[in-house]
Length: 148
Image 1 (tube, helix red, strand yellow):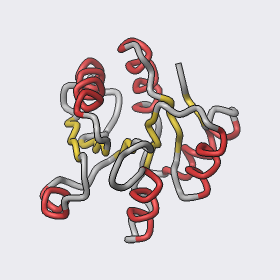
Image 2 (cartoon, one colour):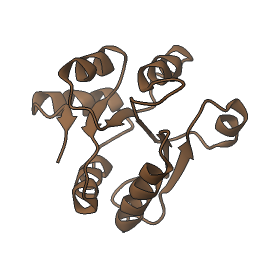
Image 3 (cartoon, rainbow, N blue to C red):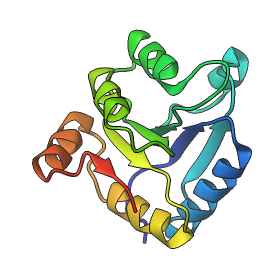
């Protein structure tokens, strides 16, 4: 039985290995959820994808960093699409900037599959129909920044 009504997750990252890692962990939880991958700003590819239920967004990318993407997504009117910064960084100034720019959560990429599965299971149980409420609930628990 699926843990979530999520159907489409979009990973924006320059590393295809991260896509494989995330897609494998998602499949372990719910095979009905599809993970899509974008590594650069390709308008035709982005337009061909279904509207994501969640966006995982890396920060450290060569051409356009995650903050550029985040501001672009929010600036184009996608205020209700949940965006989770998904990066190797643990830098508090980046965490702060992410939330100031409109991210819903910040996750430091785990090294172990079981840790990613545990994080995803928690995320899949959230009511992403109200991203601001999810962000507030994590903030109240002091868990804005999820890491293994």
